[in-house]
Image (cartoon, rainbow over all chains, first blue to last red; front, side, top):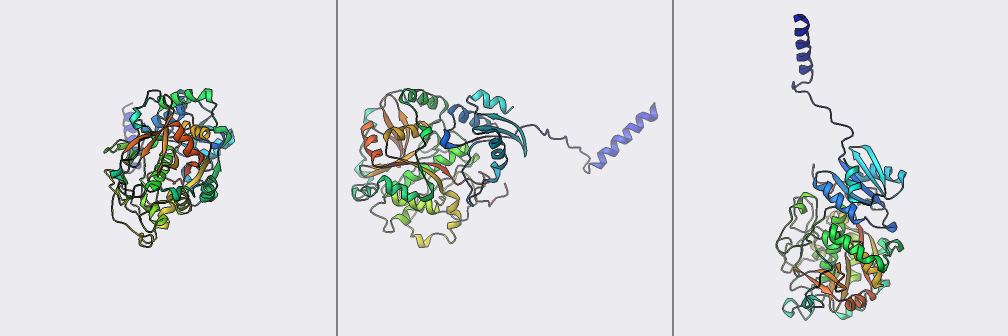
Length: 124
Length: 306
């Protein structure tokens, strides 16, 4: 029993050493959203005021939260890099569409959200 | 903001104080206004030109509800304007109005709302935190009127902006490390606007075109129908039109008095009555619907390791 205990201690120390600085990194949740992009086509309507207000709230909480009009280019005429993933996901669902992402991973999409609550809930 | 509250009548159709002007106008004399037809404005925007999309039409019976939503959620165009400018005593009005349209459009794209709109002698922390960029009206005006005095037409300045964009001005809410910047005005300026001496286009910082293209209108919606213009305001766009010797950017609509509020380039908000609004729009008005979008709002020139 005692030997097993010390075996475990030694194994734990070995793991700590393997991480180099001895401090293990906790894995980042792959599904914790960090972006909420409302993709729309302005010819079909504008961003609903409630949605705009929700995006503002999320932005102030630290998310990348913006409306993106699908035809808006960067200075070279291309889709801005920060919106490529959201645009692709939104077009699959049909616009307007809220795309919630965690890094490059699309967590969920919500077709045509209209309320502040719908956006905030989706971004949780 | 409560757009169902009456406005102080003294602020509606208020003429400009003559002490602010040079040669009796702010930069939009009649001879230039006469050239600003709707067709000429559309031609000026080139590939960026867009007609009013029919789906942006709001039926009259629904406009009050939309206005209430804008009041509740702070989503008028003015809620995307984070600063005043001051052109006193120059003739730069068309360019100050245009920068308001452009900056509001960018801030709307960034997604940050300023519930009180622009506040005189005040800088929002959010402006720097979320990537607002302040554009130089002089960077457009210097090309529109190489003679400095006499003003410019809306057609001229819109064409210049759509062709090669604005330069950012020397005062910014954060350090973007722009390679090229220009003073905002040769006029009074203020806390959030740099003032400096006149500069000819040929003396712009070398290579300035590279930075200018980062701040270009991409889509511009045109109309000469006052109800379409009202719908654009209800959708949170900022307009530009010229009338009575002055070009202005209407950015909010008051439902009680049926008046258009504009961010005047004299550190204040003033109002056009419905009749003035109708007359002005009938000659041609526009709203910038989208601006060049960077890969990173906090590093629009790609010069930072953010």
